[in-house]
Length: 101
Picture (cartoon, rainbow, N blue to C red):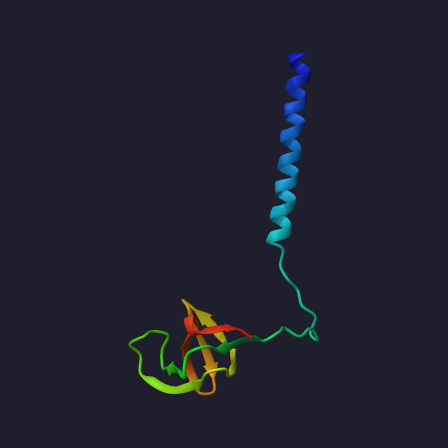
């Protein structure tokens, strides 16, 4: 009986290892997009009242280079540490004052 139990435990561990390997391969598999596949834009809506400051760099002490009014949707070109880079006006916005568009 002990040998049968040992074999059952071994089979159970083998199954777990197989499942974990499958999940690892699935999670870390490279994503290949066809040339004509569109990647949806990362857009947010400004929630700051009455407008949100756009800064030269992604930090609160950076120079203000413009503003975006409340309710306007903007496309993020990059995200970094709670900040989003936009093109118009060119600079960085604090994503605390936004919501998904």
